[in-house]
Picture 1 (cartoon, one colour):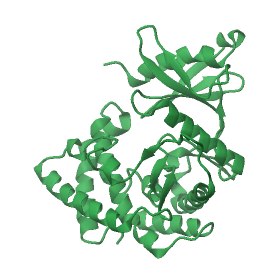
Picture 2 (cartoon, helix red, strand yellow):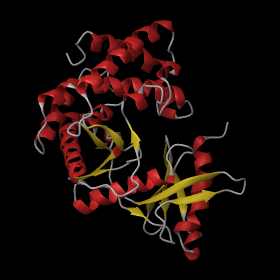
Picture 3 (cartoon, rainbow, N blue to C red):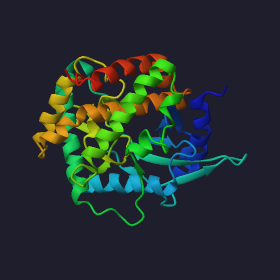
Length: 328
């Protein structure tokens, strides 16, 4: 099997002439940063930058342009720090690279930002800051007029766990046998009913980052930069907390992180008690969605590492949620 990074690198190399003039190509280099939905590379040039090679069949070109439109609006408004996208030599914001064999991918270039993922030894403080960042993003969305043709995924029940699930069916997750299917079906049914009661009014549902984990923050001194808007779309605002605790939902300190996130959010914007009470529900929505993601992304290192154990832990969390004790 071809290494996923190698598959992405073909397109990154082919994209270079679109971004660098001929005299700079010989001295340019690429180093792989990450492979998940996309392949992300550091482009060693002057100055350095980041190339994101999109996976096939995930986002349309118009959806990618819509992501970039929001990023540009956030930067213009000063709502959060996030890297600028860098157009190609011909002015294109999205480049479509086609290889001689006919395969093609979309590629986007971003400015390089120095920094490191927040230190997990100070999670409470980080989550308070994360809540404040989420509040600023949500405040921006509520007043921003989206450009004509703006299109992004919708992270509602139907597109998360329902028949149109964007990451597949959780029933195809790793380690989902008869016993696991039984408890997770009860969870699915409970979430569908609870989400319908919570509703999708404009005060609760709008454009969100949808993947604002610590891994998608870069910290340099007192400056925090938000990266990777690739999953941004329309969802419940409080889902941004659920995404923030992805893969660690079972840890005993999650309620403390929720308190910190809410505290940070309320320093910036109003947040009602009903929205705070919805956090466990949305954490479990995200958790079950990630069971589906692991099942449909077996070639990704993170998915392979989590495997069936993530499903087993999800069943334990489902029991706690259904008994009303998820957050203690």
